[in-house]
Amino acid sequence: MKLNFDINHFMVDYWQRKPLLIRQGITDFIDPLSAEELAGLAMEDELQSRLVTVRDNHWQVQFGPFERFDELEQPASSLLVQATNHWHHDCAKLAELFHFIPNWRFDDLMISFATPQGGVGPHIDQYGVFIIQGHGQRHWQVGERQNLKEFANEAGLKQCEPFTPAIDEVLSSGDVLYIPPGCPHNGVSIDDSLSYSVGFRAPDQKELFSAFADHLLDQSQPFTRYNDPELVAGHAWGEITRHQQQKLLGLMQNLLNDNRQMRDFFGRFFSQTRRDIDILPLQDDECLTAEMLIEQLEQGEILHRVEGLKVIYLQGLSELFIDGEAYPFDGDFTGYQQLANQSQLNFNLLNKALKDEAFVSQLTQWVNRGFWYWL
Image (cartoon, rainbow, N blue to C red; front, side):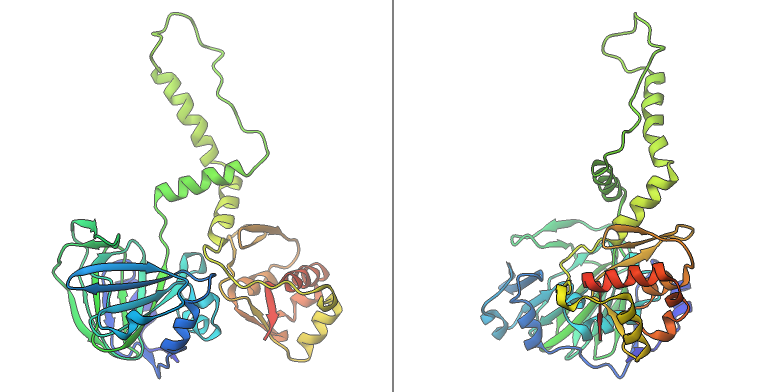
């Protein structure tokens, strides 16, 4: 499978701007799993899943893990499973088609199976999403950004009032629908169908400040405390003067202007995996040495990054961030870039970096911790 559209044209004209339907946007599309396999994932504790039904305009939501799926034998039912790319190799490969968007923006691959008339109702998401149609067909309506009333229905599903669609089409296998943040949309299944949603996160100011505050609380270093040796007696007891307001604001702004502090926060925050991933450290008798690692790569074996594990770096910073942890490094940057930019690693990709003992030692530790495994 491969993308069948002009990525550069898409980024210039549509990304974060307006919705787009791309007929046969993925050539030779093959569903990476079946409805039965999706139900199997929904039975696991580690995955977030929902079962949404609507009967006589009455909505109901159940949360997994599930043991039975009787509702899916009826019309107007949907099973939705988050982060399938963390637990299913072929689902992860599907998400890799969209690596032209930076990894720090990627959230997860959600898959939904729906019976005829199934869906979650009209709603608005504040993140961008590519919806890939798999088995079956769905009727999608998507509007441009517009001011609409949003509400939680009786089941707690956040929905929106009816909207004027800019796209009103039935999708078939291989069709791709791009929906930017803030655009209302509604998908209704025509028959039993599978749909794949590749979502990209877009934090707002509140989320960033809240996460930054948590980041600061995790640190043991001292921070600058407010002081006012220039204070004189006689000011109104209940007043914060303009001068004091400016000093307080400056105290906070100095922290935000601390480039090293902010870059460390960005790396840790955006490399954190927000849902469970399947990391299995090697047992003591299985652990590799640096020599064993090099030998297996030389023999043609391939290292694969654990599905869902985020590995990122910040331009100009000699640190690699993995799942919220910072790993500083010295020496050549090429090998660490490959670790962040490639999900699979072979000898040719790492050949130059394997001459760096520090790099090989660090990679060996990460393999032993279960971050990478032999494919």
